[in-house]
Amino acid sequence: MKTTAIICEYNPLTNGHVMHLKLAKEETKADTILCVMSGSFTQRGDAAIADKYLRAEQAILHGADIVLELPTIYAISPADNFAYGAIKTISTFPNVKYVSFGSECGDIEKLTKIANLLYSEPKEFKSALQTLLKTGLSFPQARSLALKQYSQLNDEYKDLCNILDQPNNVLGIAYIIAAKKLNFKIKFHTIQRIGSDFNSDDLSGEMPSSSAVRRAVKDGNFKELQNNVPESTYNMLRQHWPQDDELGSLVLFKLKSMEATELEQLYDVSGGIHNRLLIAAMKSSTYENMLAAAKTKNFTMARLKRICLYALFDIYKEDYTHALSTPAFAQILAINSTRKTEILSEYFKNSKNILTRYSDISKVDKSLRPLIKLDFKAQGTLSVINKTNYLNKKMLIVEPLHTIS
Image (cartoon, rainbow, N blue to C red; front, top):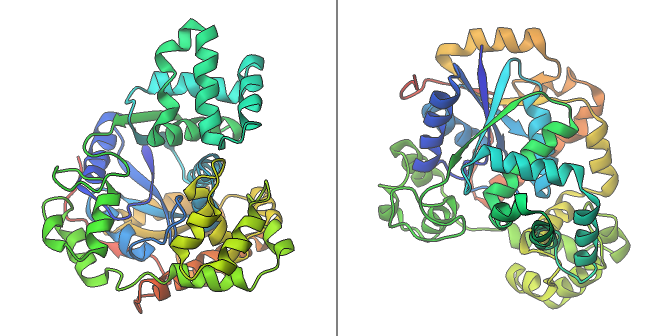
């Protein structure tokens, strides 16, 4: 089996994602497409638009052969830790030759060059980064500016100085760095993103962003979606679309019930943000107002939202440290029915700590159980947020609509 892996959220699957699945298989000459997909919550700190099993099913329908869940503790982490968890999960699967991702740059050599720079951190770059961080900039802003400053001293980076300004470039670079940290020997492949901007709500093109699709769904504008997502995704959204978003209410309740000393110990909390969050929560009646009141120039909105999720799910600094110490594991969400026997026999022969259903928690390394329980807790919470009674607990066996050859 020659496998290409794709790290994704499919929140939801769009026409652009289907194109990526097709091109990744063709251009890497893979016979198997493995997806590692965020489960119930996303890297930007938002609730997923639909249950993880439903979204995994869409991936199989449109070209993936197997979908694994990216554990929640990594799925709602900053980009570097999100990438580390994804690559760690991919490492459980045999014969993965490539990781394929979309990027604004579309040039794997340029992205690899920046990844090598960020991994080695030359003295001049590191000094510039530390100086910029002291000014109160967020880490992504400081790192991007540090690259620009470094490029002024090193001509070979001058045409690369804007690469860190774009989110998919940043994630792709994080994947390359994560593989280095894990000493995971793998090649990388990228395709250039086309269509609307990452955060755009524009649905006029054939390949809108997932943000635009989610906005249309939450506004009930389903007619506008029909040309922008696969028919099966459209039907899924019509059946399972969120009736109301209760995430803010759950988070506000939790924050109002916590002490500052508890908040301070949450994962990724630093710089006194716990005090700002607590004060903002006590003074606010809505999630949006609370976030606006707590926002500072050195904390992105996504980071604030993630910290709110850490509060909701009781994810503390020691929990992430524990996650890093555990062996790699994978929960299979969905698999191609026509290749089930072939893929699973190879997978179980070469890997440990693989789950096909939640009850398999009793069979894996005991150190993994808190992470798996967190995944199930997150799934149940999402069902409350999205007002759905769908709560699957075992791998879906899916017959694909078509086969990518």
